[in-house]
Image 1 (cartoon, helix red, strand yellow):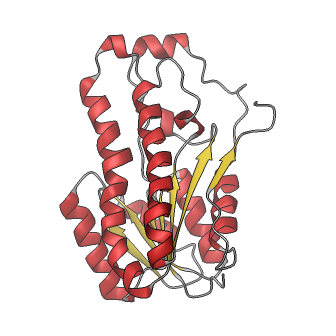
Image 2 (cartoon, rainbow, N blue to C red; image 1 turned 135 degrees about the vertical axis):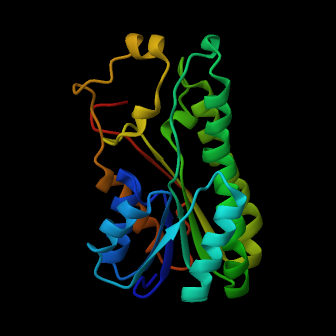
Image 3 (cartoon, rainbow, N blue to C red; image 1 turned 60 degrees about the vertical axis):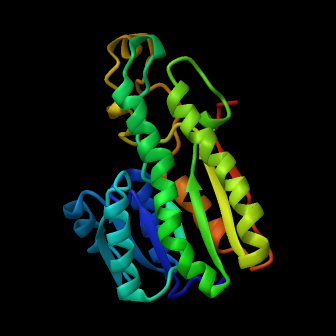
Length: 243
């Protein structure tokens, strides 16, 4: 697909993976709507982009915030070609330690947040009879482990949701859906963890193989730049040395 002047919305654009994706889409000619809660960080990122872009204050845990954000995007650009759902949290906890609010927030952001943004982008894509939705899931949605129950469940839900979205949206509206499932990426996502026992048990030090955020961004560009008749369904990416 020709990417020049395509309108791309990237949620979580203030974070490592989100900002990398925004830069790579911009480098390939897209006009990027940068969406996140941290407007000051988005404004700094915007200065690095070559093409026209838009800063959008958006909290994906709030239906009102997401609706207002998409109103702003559509008022500016009148259409949405690509939606990349990056916004997410990762407060890993042992279930026995009863971090209920963190469990609920994980589902609120990682699952409900995507439902809200899909709801915001779908009317434009349906009208256009085309579009591409990329959901950043995780290998943790397929390979569960102790301490990752709720986070893994949230990402498994996104992988399943992506498959069902393809079944419904691709035949009738020509909307592509891709699920990208990274292994460990070198970002600050694990700073959300407050479970002291889990932090004592698990080593998140520098010896663990990690992906660079650019690797995920390149995967997004690969998926959205494919020909109209090609839908890259899933991409599972791990650091070299990890099975």
